[in-house]
Image (cartoon, rainbow over all chains, first blue to last red; front, top):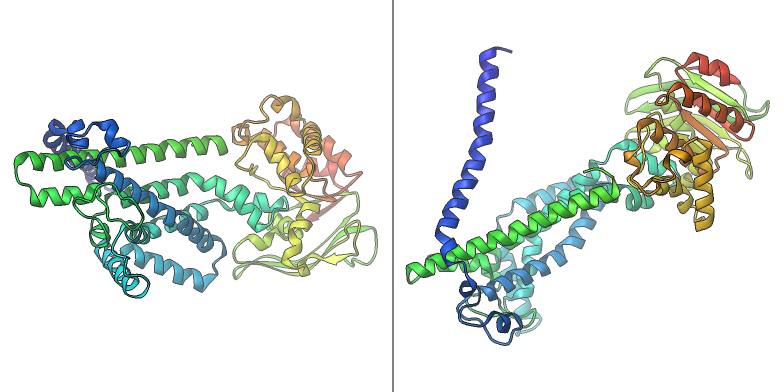
Length: 293
Length: 230
């Protein structure tokens, strides 16, 4: 190949490799510059003593603690819906679905992955209205509806990563278990799933991160600006992404705006911890099972 | 060759194997006598490994692969059967009795011990029995001394030669009636290869072995009968 072309490609690759970290760095710098000064216990708990807030003895009105708790609960519930459904669907598509069925399911999950989150939010809202009219008048947009809608949002990520992880297991390894007399099911449980558990885990945690940062879905299905800690699945709740959105559009003074930046840093820390946890877990599982990363 | 005459254990008649539309094996006829070692030789890519995988129907697990013809096998407690006509539900049992060792070591993503114990656990052997059989199998392939202190280590950490012997031990632990070997010494140095050859000489007194080998000298030393493919 022409030397000029090779050099051009090298420079382009180098530039693109540098541009991404630069943008991330700029974003972090901007966020830390604006939000770091307000990061304090007051941002989290307002004027309430942290212990009293954590033990739910006193309600926090002026801090982001209820939003953190709301985010935690809605994400926890949504992954509880999505993980079993997503992993099992992924296993089915990768291992058991035949030609046409597999194609239809693959297209369906791809379409679901490309549905904008606001549309899924609208679906959740419609579901809440349907349940309100037909099941019980006490059902409104709430934590349960939000978590179900978020589960639909993250489901295709979990299905696809599970499917791809399973399909990436090499043929010789698949044959190894089967050649020793394992049934297809036993081979799946004892050989294939342990081998690709790291990949599945990564998908699950990435999906969890996606659920933690989404605003459009929860905005239509149960989140409010000031609800405190939810007391039941049918309660409304607060969440960090919505708090950031709300405060950045409704702030009364510069301090309130800075609180929004502070909340964004807290959200970033939470998702960062999730990714760190995923990375650690993936390494541990890989080392324990496979003896390599 | 007719399968009706002689002390045969495996009789392959007019075997054709296709990968999609590509024919890999055409009209193969092989007969392996009971308690003997039959060697399959031939150039690379002529379908020797495919032939072995057809005998225990592992070929079924390769997407797009199809086998036609007859592969008759006499197992100890049953009448001669055509394995190509067996229902899918009987394949795991068939593969436990017709063990296959691949050319490239494919250890399972688990510890050294569990690799050898895996087929025994499938057969629901007792813990004590599993421990004994694992140790015996590892001793047979001259691996016990090298791994006895590392039984709980991941099998992936073993060297290529150790992995190859581990795979052989894993199959021997099942106690198969027929042993299919695909280049069983390709990753071993000369000293270990000779040990494994001695083991095979002992094993063929008890079980039927069908082996693919590229080494002519090895074939001459071990084989009771040689077939050329391709």
